[in-house]
Length: 215
Image (cartoon, rainbow, N blue to C red; front, side, top):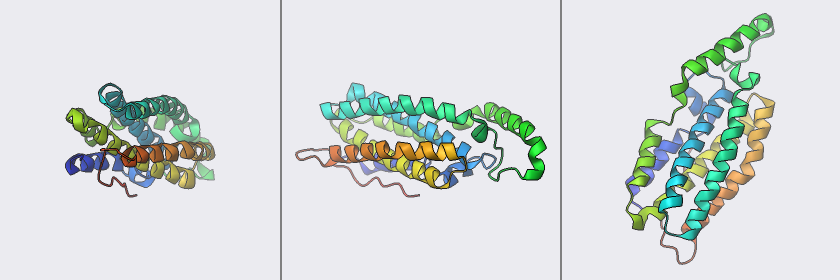
């Protein structure tokens, strides 16, 4: 049985990657779309760290296989998120409210300033302290408990990711980014169900508490 404190730590870390309103609160100067890209990138990086540990330390072959799938997903998401974050519609929106028509002649300057601000504040997108603690906590799990701990982490991660991408697909400002987020949801939901099946598979000893992340 996975210890409850570990599950609580995972939930606390991944709750920071929940819907965009919460993500934006970390940096109110960002547009909601830019906040989404930043937090989705953060979450994907944490997933990759957790999965990399599982590839080498997991005992069950199905858990290892799932970890490799997470790594493959991260590689694609990271590349596409980086591309989305560089678009003018996302990087060039310095505030949550889009510029009015009367400010059209200053749009280019505002976009340039916003991009410069994001570069200067690069550390804001680094994994949070809670996320780093979650990775360290998984690394410290006894081998007999590692598989269950990783599965618990992935359930929490996928619940948070689904909530985050649903929020962007519903509330995002940029049409292209909204459509992209919506296209990712089927695969994220499929991975969530796959993670849950690892916990509930007949004969499995990977019993973990609920990891629901609420928006």
